[in-house]
Length: 281
Ligand code: C2E
Ligand code: MG
Ligand code: MG
Ligand code: MG
Image 1 (tube, rainbow, N blue to C red):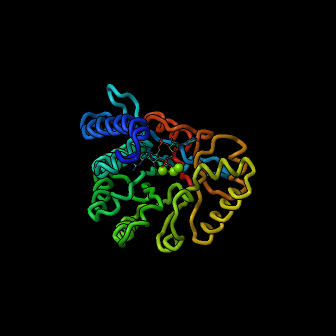
Image 2 (image 1 turned 180 degrees about the vertical axis):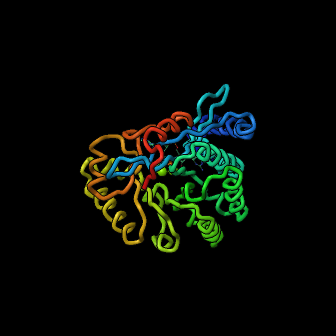
Image 3 (image 1 turned 90 degrees about the vertical axis):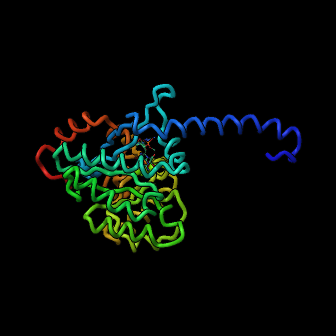
């Protein structure tokens, strides 16, 4: 890759690296104006009780539609926003928008918002959450924040303290994409997560009969049970996958089989139809 790596290597790699760097530069500049230019919106994916099929809430998922570049996947722009230190202002917009939209539904469904590690390493994030709740009027117990295990991998205890103060607000926490990172299980016992979200890769593996995937889901469900936490199976696409994770004891399910991420108005219609005035577990 470097200039002294030999002429052939240099010529084969350099232009490609240049294209990637240029694309990133273009995206980063576009990303800086995305919120202000109203290019972002949220979609809401249903989360369902695995046993009863009843809707319990939605996960808010960020969407970016650039006028020239088109739809850009969060899998692409969220890591870029994190590296460019833009995730805090974007994440604040996500939180305020999700709270405001969910408060307007006025239905007993939860809204889950994804939070990046960078946001949790800033103590001021606690007041961002408190303000989003106060301004929207959303009851704290209807808000859930999704964090990934990578938040525990950085030095220092600041994120743990921020999470504690968020819990004190009455907001729920869930552990997202569980099993895809690598970290010790110790923090699980120390943080009051309401739910552990089991990554789609295990769900797929289990329904294909992969022994290791089945063993891992079993172990996570047992661990969650003993810690008083629920489990949510992510990315359930088929009836077979649903039956498998239900049989393995997962408490909640989410995935295309139950519903794709929906525009806010459609999420509201679904919630009104499914929940009406009754309280979801
Ligand atoms: P995630 O938090 O694990 O979200 C679940 C992802 O799985 C979403 O992708 C969702 O659309 C997708 N998904 C749901 N059901 C299925 C299914 O049955 N099959 C398949 N193949 N996929 C399914 P999406 O919306 O592209 O988001 C990707 C990731 O970007 C999210 O993964 C999350 O890590 C991140 N992200 C999205 N919105 C935000 C946000 O507001 N803030 C932050 N920090 N990250 C976000
Ligand atoms: Mg998530
Ligand atoms: Mg997830
Ligand atoms: Mg995932």
